[in-house]
Amino acid sequence: MVNRNGLLATLLTAAVVVGCTPAGTDQGEKPGAVLAISQVTGEVAYRERIALAPSSRVGVSLYAISPDGSEAEVASNAFSTEGRQVPFPFSLDLTTEQGQAVSGYRVKARIEDAHGRVQWVGEKVLAVPSEAGKLDAGMVMLKRSVVRDGSAAAGGEGFQSYRCDGALVDTRMQGDKLELVMRGGKYLLSQEISASGARFVGPAADGEVEFWSKGDTATLTTGNKAGASCAKVATGPLGGGEWVVEDIASAGVIDNSRATLMFGEDGRLSGRASCNSYSTTFKQEGSRMTLGATATTMMACLPALSNQEAAFLKILGDVQNAYINETGALVLVASSGKTMTARR
Image (cartoon, rainbow, N blue to C red; front, side, top):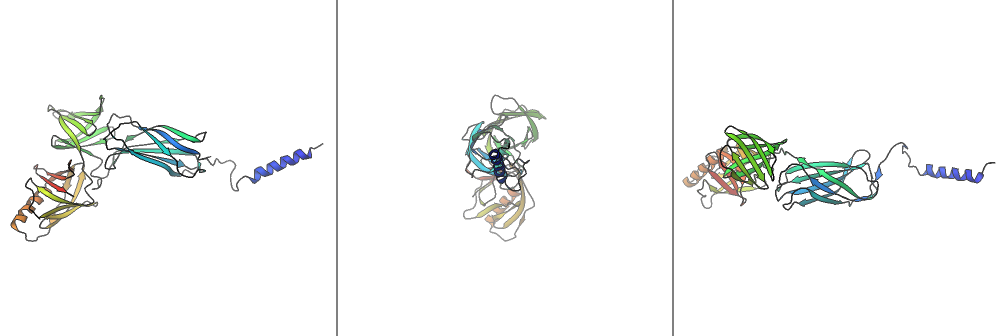
C-alpha cells in the first residue's frame, strides 16, 4: 500500500528545490564562492640584498576575481617605509559590499621611490578560503622593476644617479646585473655576496669596477684608485614649471636680468637666454642630458646682457649632465666642467 502522506511530502520538497533554482542557471556551472572575508594580511619582501632609501613607499592592493575572469579592486593600502627594510607586514580591510561571487583573489604589491617611480613589483593569487573572516596571504615576493620612461617628469629611464666625489654616475638594473654609466664609460656589473647593502663587481680596462650601495650612499672603486664616496642625487622631475637661472659659470647673474629654462613633456626646452628667447630639444637618461640645435631670436641687447647670454648659450650647448642638488637647485654641467644653477 502506497504511503500517500510520504509521497506528497517528497513531491513538495522537489517542487521547492526546483522553484528555488535561478532561471537560466546551468546546474553544471560553478558560479564561484561568495565574498565573505573582512581582512587580508601578509608580508611584502624580495630576495636581493639591496637596501631601500628611507623615503621609499609600499603599496598593496587586493583584487576580487569573478567567475568570468574579470577583476575588481576591493581594498588597498600605502605606507612609508620610514627607513625600515623588507619584509613589510600589511593589512587590508575590505570596505566593499559583501555578497559578491568570486573565484579567487589577487594581491598586487609595489615599492616606489620618493619620486613615485616603481622599484619593485609582485603579485600573488589566493584561493577562496573555506571559512569566512580573515585571509592570510603569506609572503608576497617582489622582483626588481626596470622603469623605461624618458619623459621630463620621470627624469630618465629608470636610472638612479649618484655624485661620487663630484663626478656623476648613473645606475640601473638590467635583469640581474647593474648597468653603471660614468664619464669613463659604461659597465655591466654582477652582484656579489655582501654582509650589508648591495655589492656589484665587473671588469674594466684598468682592473675592476666595484659599486657598493648602502641606502642613499655608495662607494665606487675603479682600477687601483681609492674608493670614491657617493651620494644619491635626484634628476627630476624637471617639467611642471619654470627654472630661473641664478648662476652662470660661477659668475652669478646681472641684477634684474632673467634667464630661464622650461622643460616640456614633449622633449622641448625653451626660455629666455637673458635677452633673446631660445628653443631646443632635450633628452635625459639619468643625470646625462643631450640637447639638439638651439634656435634664438636676434634682438639687439645691451653689451652686459649680450655677454651673459653668450655664457648661458655656451653652457647650454655643451651640457652633459643635469641633477638637482641637496638645496633643490637644478645644476647643469657642461663637458668643460662649468655649471649653471637655476631654481623654481
